[in-house]
Amino acid sequence: LKNEFEEAKLLEYIDVYDTHAMLKVRYYFERYIDKEILKKCKKWCNDFNYAHGALREIKSIKSY
Image (tube, rainbow, N blue to C red):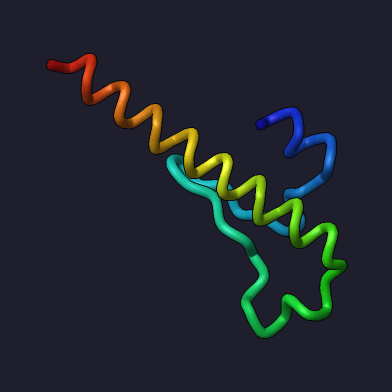
């Protein structure tokens, strides 16, 4: 995911925090962004958030 983020230069559109990622663009500005870029950004955010959720679950299982 990190390589994809850097290669596609998504930093302009996505904020990445420790455990989640979200679009910098608000809903009312989405119509001014290229639809393909917006689609790629949303998919990347969903993949990133899903991966971190799965990692959190794995860590909680290992702690038992």
